[in-house]
Amino acid sequence: MKLSAYRVDRATLEKNDGQFAEPFFHDPPEAQCDPEGCSKRYTFGYAVPEANPPLDRKVGLEVRMETAAGLVVAISMVLPRYGFVYWLEGAEVRAVEKTDPAVQAEALMRAKNRIESIVRKHVGEDCTTEEADEARTLTCGKVRVVVKKGPAGEDLVRILAL
Image (tube, rainbow, N blue to C red; front, top):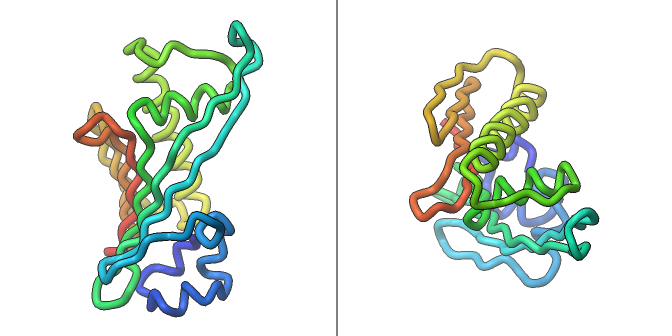
């Protein structure tokens, strides 16, 4: 979703007019919608060729578009526990030990850095950053992005319109 889609009427976005054109949101299984927004479960896979034996992984992701008064106000992407570790493993195409605290810390830091660089590229450099052990909050004008470990151990990226 483009950041310009925030505070836009949800019905307009659902017409697939280019603002909300991500194919996975429209492909089966269908998104589940209610008055507060829509949720879509998505599974992505990646190979880990150096694992013994070589294997393919599948990781689930939930994307939630939240609305208030019919307008899009937030997008949340929730990965399962170790989601950022799986992202690190897939990006590096190498097996990692997901329960290793050092690997988890590296994966969280790399996710924070990747997401911050993408946000700054698309919204501009005029942002403030607040860093905590388990979270980074980036505020850029009318957009706030939080990358963190969730309360149940899941990994979370949340983009809010201010």
